[in-house]
Length: 508
Ligand code: ADP
Image (cartoon, rainbow, N blue to C red; front, side, top):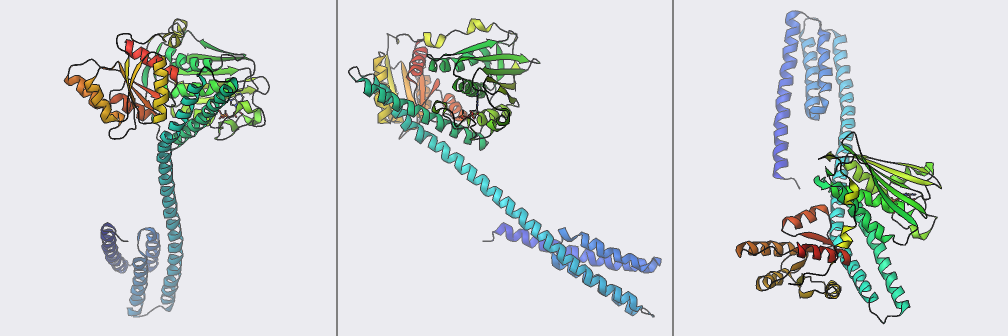
């Protein structure tokens, strides 16, 4: 259907072409007169054919043909009206007319072909962009839908493992369920992260951070996963690395996690050394060296492409999606850095990321900061008030969060939506609130904003609010923190992380 705008622009174009036609005729007549007046060679007028042809990309077909026809007719009439008409001149004009019209038609068809192709490509690329956007939105929605049931499976199997009189076979089976859901979660996270990067939705968010904390927060959880491994994970930090730097902490943490996890996965014995230093005062160099199985030279360029796995024929314990390095490389490049690998097949590999950062102060002694504080913080909950409000509509999540909170000495009140969360908060005292984000009637974000308003209205102290969410993108996390939440706990919930965070917020 033709829209009003398209109709108006078509009319305007017709008027424009008509004006050009009139101007063209005026030029042809004036040039003729000028040639006669100045007694210039008549062949000069042939130049007009070429000028008209050169305008083909900008003029409509009737205008060009009209001008060519008029030009030839005008020349023919001029010759005929002369006292001694030159027959050669007449023939030349007729040939010129036929020749240029054929040429113009060929040019039109070629240009039309190119224009059609261009329009088709633009249309296809618009369609592809729309499809990619739809895919990103679909995956963003799926992110919540997939992570929530995985969260339930992990939580309940963890909870069931703890029942005392359970047989060892049952425990073994439950542990298998948990480890399978961990693998599934890893795969889902890789696919979601990759599609977010591909859709261009990822933005860079520099923040000022403690370089020691950054490394600690990444390495400690990996270390605890490999407690019984014969591979030692070591951190070596150059004394020149500044304590405070400005960088995109979340992305650097993800880069580090991927490189270290791979190094641990592909190493059976020996060590994995993470080395961090600053180069040229503003480039963070992170090298992860392992004594693992190494990568053949011919495979080294392949491993950064998506879904490429060059050790597929090895053991099952080295499962993966082949997306980790593709994600890592894109993240490094987004931060204007580079990622490279040096490896000897059979002996080990070193992955090096060079990432520009802004150093904020002089170097610090990292060892002072590199203590396992997070785990030490696990102390008994606040004895004065240990009531926690859990706002969560998912029954499975309610059951296992309640189980673990009560086990750690908390009194727990469960509400199923944001409206109830606000009304319970206004009538009771809680030491902390665990707030799901997607809830019926009122979302966790809205409920938090209302609770923060109530606190200001009644001059109350801020109650810690921890978001529980399966939506873990950076933008979403920023929205939750902006709404007044103190921390975002991703689903599936890591119970140890939840307990540490609760203790930390209640006691501070
Ligand atoms: P995944 O680990 O999920 O298979 P990655 O994209 O992280 O996917 O890695 C791609 C491939 O690169 C791996 O399958 C493996 O063959 C190889 N690779 C990555 N890191 C190492 C490493 N440290 N040592 C040996 N091979 C590695």
